[in-house]
Length: 387
Image 1 (cartoon, rainbow, N blue to C red):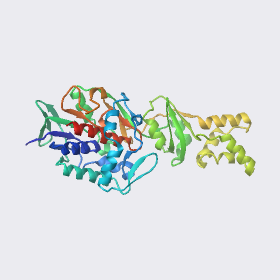
Image 2 (image 1 turned 90 degrees about the vertical axis):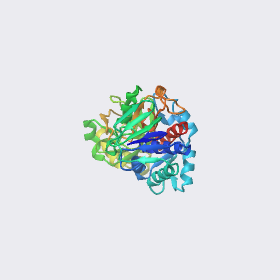
Image 3 (image 1 turned 45 degrees about the vertical axis):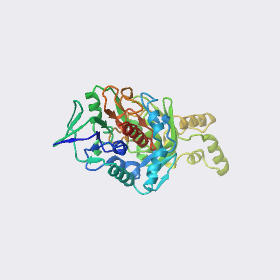
Image 4 (image 1 turned 135 degrees about the vertical axis):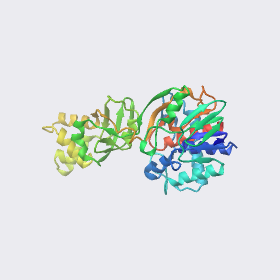
């Protein structure tokens, strides 16, 4: 059986659903083909089940891409304020957590219900449990599934990246791009916990669950947020952020007491309370981490020179991670379809008319905190309106 539409969209994630809505509103007969048994599965697990759906401080500087200018056009033409207006139209309660991050008050299902409702209103058809087996292009795009054939002059690839394979992530979007001659920027896990080398694991990882406010750096990039020690290494917002910039073989540098004069704090505590130098240090870092730090680094005598070294070490803890926890634990995939292959205004392929790529499959990766969802909405709007 053959079905004919104006546009076929592969993937019913954030970008695919939103693109279908924008196309449907403009009178296009849109169909979404989705491998999973329900739309928006990744939306549902995001933000601890509350969906960090955008960030009010979104700028192009919050994105990583081989072409740092590519995202500017789409982000400028569909902004966080535009998506917030849609959320408010559906009377979804939300709140700002920290640093401009907006979350649903109730649950992420509010966002998936909103998108499904908008799809229904726009006449979009969603085909679930539908595996795309083959895509061909003659005078139009022909998508073969197990039992049916779908045809349309326009094809939008919104298949996402490689992160969280247990949710159904595959390399299909990249394979399809290569099939049509488009280049791929090498992919890697991003927003992902780091795994420490065995020696550092033995030294610190039994402190799993300990959290500290830090500044972490690699190369010229740094983030100030919380770090969490895990049973394999390091996680928490600061570490997830830096992971997107970290390259295997390079060290990371951690300031465990940002903008604090550690030795002054110790001297004050010692003078005020008559405590030992060790006891004074326990007031500087989380107690279990401070204890361990001194077990490993405590000077033989508390001379001024030793205090200076302690100060330097606390502000410049250098580690060489062994690896990341990989795509299983990565929130997103960095790299993807080379942006030089696409129009920044419409997300259409420069080589293949009618072929569009949006969302995570493209080489645009947001920082932690709602930016990747905003890229999904903005890139989807660019393509949906161009259709």
